[in-house]
Image 1 (tube, one colour):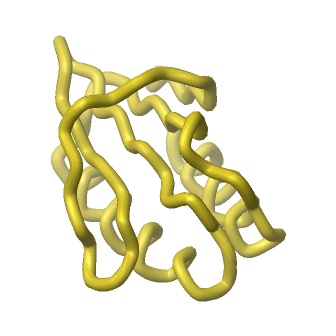
Image 2 (cartoon, one colour):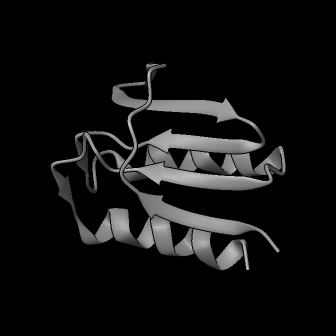
Length: 88
């Protein structure tokens, strides 16, 4: 099945999603999502929307880069868990 990873990694391509700064990069079948500095109730809905768009493309793997993330609220954790559940 699909692999789900959350780890630290440096990503070079930056993308603004509305008011939420996040990055999405594709590398050898892996989609790398650099989460915003604050992954909270303000940013989680927009991040989840963008992740769903990427998941519709059926990537081989998705990696979440938290290296630039200072804070993750329960809303951010919920998004990560929801994505993990859909990829089992």
